[in-house]
Structure formats: structure tokens, C-alpha cells
Length: 259
Image (cartoon, rainbow, N blue to C red; front, top):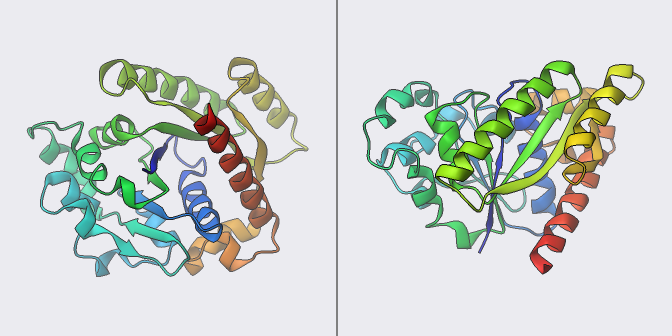
């Protein structure tokens, strides 16, 4: 049975969608079956796979409000091993529709459990906010992967996210754990970068990945072409970094599964 991982940070612009797209593609390239669930109304992950949102009839919105099953909303992508449940602009107003529904925090979980055994990994790209949709993503996952940008405000966002994770764990998902913390947009020559890394490692010594994702022009360009970085520019620093991250991610995942 597959592992559900929510990629989350309540602060925007930290590389969540970039990480989901490129980790999924790298896992698929290694023969893994991956389902990506884009529950961010901005739909950056959907766009990152070259999927036109307006062309999709059944999206994660229909799944959440009960108009279709998760299995019926899955679409293939052009990239090896990767399938997608796409985002929709209608998600922006879904909070109002979800509020009166039964099991409003467990709706995504109930749906993904029906397809979990078809995939090795299910990666969920969540919104950069604390909302019913974000809580659905946290309530259904086995673990949380946290991308964090190397700046001061990211530290504040990390504290807020950890508080949210604790609340969801206590109330809805007792087995959820931290998958890991990934530094993104890394610029080694900045003093602030070293300070932020040291501060995070002090409080989360076992959760920080050794791999860091640098600022990279190709990483910024790839989404406009609807391609993960390994398909857009495999020789770039960004592609190399996500390849290394995928290897480390799998190694850690295998170690935990063996325990």
C-alpha cells in the first residue's frame, strides 16, 4: 500500500509546488508509481505538469464535495510513472461548501484510501494557508514534507506549521509524522542562509535533509514549459539537486520502513 505525503508550509513562495512536481517526476523516473494531488486553488502543480486546468472535467474539487470518486478524477501526465488529480479555481470558494458537510476534515482521506494501494507514493500539494482544505491534507497523510526557504520569516512559518501539525495529530491523525525538512532557494554565500539552517537543525536535528535545493534559473523556467526540471534541463543544478534529494528521500523512507 502506498504512502501519502502532504507537502506543506503555511508560508507561500517556499517551493512547495516545485518540490512536488520534481520529486514526483524523479520518483517516477526510478520506476515508482506516483499520484500527485493538487489541492491548491492556484494550481501551480497542475500547470507544472503541462496540464491545462480548463480541460479537466473532474478535479479535486469534485472529489472533496462528493460529486465524483478519486479514481474517476485521476488523469495521466506526459511523464513516466506520474498521475494527477488536478486543481480547480473553484477550490477558492470550497471552504463555504465544505463547512456544513459531514466529516468535512476527513473527506480527502476517505477518497484517497480507495486508491492508495495503486501507488507507491501519493504527494499532496497543499495551500499556503490554514484552511479546511489544508486540514484535509494533513488529516489524511502518513507524513508531512516541509520545504522551507532560507529566510527569517520562514522560521516563523515553521513554528506555526508545527503547532498546526500537533493539533491535527492530537485530534484527527495520531500516526502522522514529519517526513523531513527541505531547504529551498538556497544561496550558500548569504550569512542569513547559514543562520537559518543552523537554527532549524538545532530544533529538528533528525528531520533536516542533507540535500539543499539552490536558487536556479532553470528551476524557475521549467513550469512555464509545463515540464519537471529533469525533463526540461537535466544537466542543470536544479535537476541535479532534485535527483540527489529523491535518492535521499527514498533512502530515508526505506530505512523507516525496515524498522
